Image (cartoon, rainbow, N blue to C red):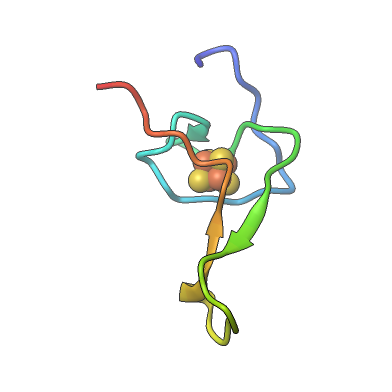
Length: 57
Ligand code: SF4
């Protein structure tokens, strides 16, 4: 994923994700899908980035 460019519109600090540009805390995807695992989300912890893919070890 070293050829990824940062998307300045998507800030993200999830360094475990393969799409994260760790040195800059941005996502490298053009678009992400945000969802929720709750029936009635009320706080930030209720929502997730569903585009997350675990970084290869
Ligand atoms: S896909 Fe989601 S979790 Fe991964 S770097 Fe982009 S915004 Fe962060």
